[in-house]
Amino acid sequence: MIKKFSLKNLELPKLEQDEFRLLVAEVATQGFTNSGQVSQYIVRNKLGDRYQNISGFLEMKKADDVWDFKGGFPKHIFARLCQELNLVNNGSMARPGKFRSFKDSD
Image (cartoon, rainbow, N blue to C red):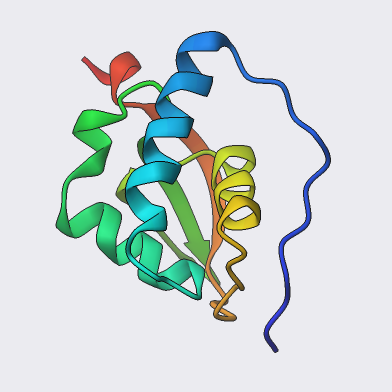
């Protein structure tokens, strides 16, 4: 089942807003239609290093499996990104858990 992300207006601290705007501008040029494409682009291009306040390690869970996704975003940032870019969820059964930014991982 494909579902559309929805998100109410969400205020972010200025540093996170600036990084988010830069990220949206960069990813918008790629023509992606679903969230999985964005995730692949983020990992392949190591965008987590560039956007260290809004990206980092995201714990993912699927059934009994748990792993850290390097280059992930907290749920509210990822949902807002998908909303801004009009992306759909590709129906993955994996669910996000705890998030730790790259900045806080040093």
